[in-house]
Image 1 (cartoon, rainbow, N blue to C red):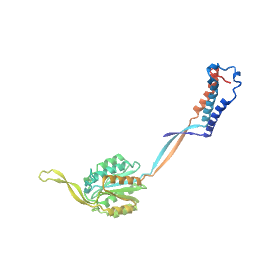
Image 2: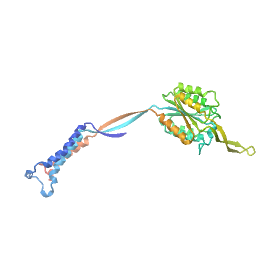
Image 3: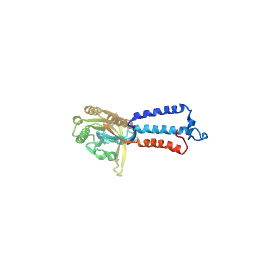
Image 4: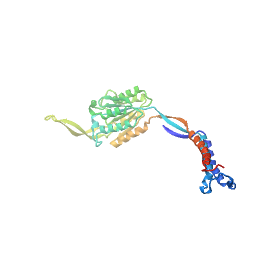
Length: 331
């Protein structure tokens, strides 16, 4: 809430322009006859006493003009009406997301951090989280609880679902969540580093389902195709201890499929080969999918003329009071 000073009758303020002219006229008028007034104070007291009554009346006139202009304090406040976007985040947690080409972290670690930043920037929207590998699982339904969603994303790990890359199943699961929500604007953001290799739902069929429901799908290919270092836990049969060994594995990103899904649903495809590029992709999606915002403004006015009216009355009364006290003179 903020105070906005306004005047209900501002044309009275034009009267203030007359005050300098009155002051000029006061000092320009003939001085003869001034000594005929019997109540003048002693000349040694100073000439200011002769002019003080005039300037008191001039100040009273200024206060009167301000009072007639009716100053008001307008207290305004705004009511924001948002029609949020429903966003289902679809995150690949298959074993290949452990690839350590996104130093100093692996692909999943970087993706989780970027997703958490994205969630924090969408305060007016409902967001949910679907994770997938060989199957898909909803970790968070659409919610406005940012703290809960942040904690759920932070807790995502590789062992949450069976290994594999079931892109079709994941998209269909996200579409089912978004369909039930019923919002006008619905999107899915698919983050994966592989190609569909399992699942009973074909990715193109899932894309057709999303398109039919009016769900835009943004697809993000994480990393690059080729041989990448992936840590693999290895158990020593003699000691029973488990150690981690980094092995070069072939990883393929099905870029044509991801492009087709995005194009068919009205979304866009992005390739992120490092942590900075992935953050830039989500920043661009954040700009593309702006939440509609309508603002209603209300103003309540309070009259503030009374202090000026009282000041004018006090200044008019002060002039004869000073004359009675023989400080000034009333002509």
